Image 1 (spheres, rainbow, N blue to C red):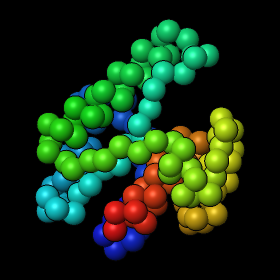
Image 2: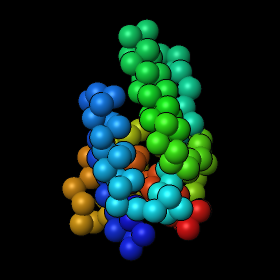
Image 3: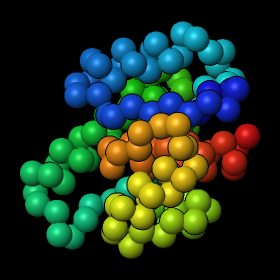
Length: 129
């Protein structure tokens, strides 16, 4: 979410280098006080396989470390908290969050890959101003 209220979302970059480059690009256009990240506080999922859990954990840790290394302020929020605030308790159904994100952002082609990102960004805008 940009200071002017415009929404933007990207899929998670493929590599650590791409993640750092994307965050550096975002940081270069803003002063230290206006750049802020909200990260979903996640945990392992019982029915996820070992390989997918490992990859998910790597991405989560990598994102946290990249934000810390670049000194980007951040907060963590549970899925239950942001979903309740955004009126889309999914109970595991990704179509619920995709539908809600499309309602809030009609000018963006919302996909499953960016729906949660948009909703968390809107949650952050509403909560942290």
